[in-house]
Image (cartoon, rainbow, N blue to C red):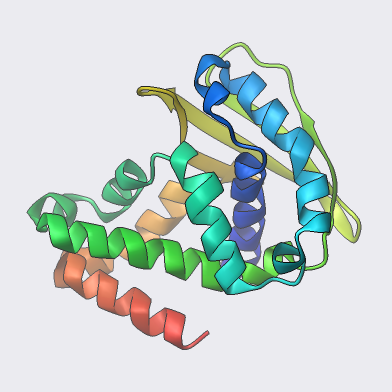
Length: 196
């Protein structure tokens, strides 16, 4: 269940990143997600690395095209809880890097094969944007993006099929951070990633 939901999460997060440009800051959340979504089907089908599920290509793509539009530092801090504030800047940065690597490596297969056929974006007037990702070989995936404007619109949570990324990761990773600190969680993620 967890793996399936978060493979879908990565697909949803990747939808956010396709076709990113500097003009995104002037757009509403709906306009941003709608514009980015209009490019996803072509990109997944034409980028060989994404199509084949290359973890290295996905990591590169995530860093360049997705992370500028995700409030990842605050997401990770929210997941980790009080241990985040006790960690040094170097420990926080190492956890951010390892968290991105873990996500990219774990869910690389979610992009394999150009499965996305279209993305429907529901009209909205606020900072929550609902989408439906239509796929060749499966039921549509409902993905809701919660965005906030802090010098430009950024995603701070992704809800896939009714499951919040922050809530799910908090239940999985906060107990580790509570017990072993940010350094312990980073080591845990490195170990998990190396087993994939």
